[in-house]
Length: 585
Image 1: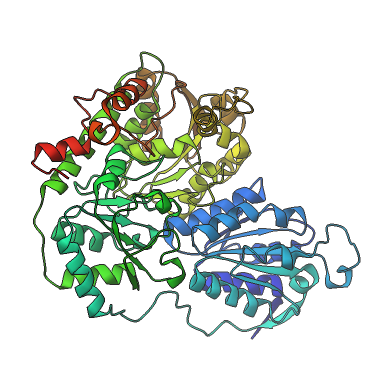
Image 2: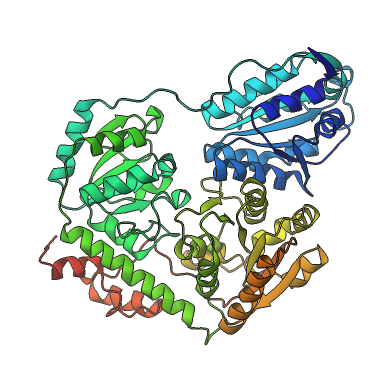
């Protein structure tokens, strides 16, 4: 045993779990935890953020990028409440996170002391594990248990630390329990389930895979299954990259952040393999299709959409079992039509990128980024229209991607870019934000500058909350509260310690990003902010795309195509492609 303050002992527990950095801001109620970080500074990096919310969001993004637990801390009162956005993001996207929360000394609790709050019930809804330490000796144990539960339950754990306990000297003995966070057994899927679902797949004329984040560790299996059975793949937005985006069987996503190819595939499928997801918008799928749902959480089975066959098990194990049957299905006209539809969509996005006659298209910016990214690069993507541009335009093959999926908080891009630079230091980190989301967290460019993190932060500036603007237009409301006062984000970035650039047309995009490439090649260690001043056009909505005259009538098709500048000769409906191949649906 070794004598040390409990604040240092709990940091040693973090080290044992391979945590190498932690975010937070000091405060009177967490000072001796910070003292512990100082005493262990050679083993774990303390990242001083400018807002606890940024630290918590970055910790959640760490987990999304690496699968390892992310850690943030805050002092009592406002420091604690500022953590909530990151905690809820971790909860709703099912990633492990730990929050260390300061509390006033035990002798001052229940006395209306300065910044005193009853913190345990505050976190009862968000946390999978929520405990207040009551003795100094138990602090290392409680932190260890919190981490184990965060991994086991795939969510945020909270440990509340009265300041006097962290300051108390204890005898510390390293934890002996193995830090096992992955299953060490092989799951066997019921052969009857494999046989039954294989029969359903063989009977389907237009089968479709709908893949969620539960398959993020099963890319090889998903690709193999899709190729062996010749089934096209849609993924949820948070699962972008679960199949390489340049794979011919990857046809995009469904919903407002999606693609034409994703929307139309859902209109014509007759069987969905719903794998590793609790996709909340599944309730909007067509009602006349069969659904096989595979999920390791029985609560998620049928939660969002009625299913015809359920497999309670790990989706990766299920795919392995299906592959092991040795069965195959031929490449049908259904698959080929979907592949052509996706290729047509990509070509249309490329045309949008090339036209800056009415202002800079965001697609031109993502196209240039796509030409620069390396195989290990990370993307931190904010919430709003920028999510659409990123999902549609960025390659996601070996690259890693983090956004606020189900919680969808704005201000996520910059913290996730910060996390990418720290968690994957041997690759380039990118953050993509709208001007609304960036304004919420811009001061933490200082954090990137302080720690010499050369994140490339791209701000799509159109002077409005574009996503909400579109909702107000679609629902025929007054346009109110969605306009933004402009700012020169390049100069803001420079004032905070970054290198700033502004682009307003395609020529400037080429010139500036080539300059950035040269800077990074020369070993630049400063963050970069690119103020991309884009045109006001909304990205095309893909939640409903009436382009098939047989389904929606020619008048509706013509009106939609005119509004969205779609050349129907270049973007025929999937139904037309199928009918041209003799499939009368």
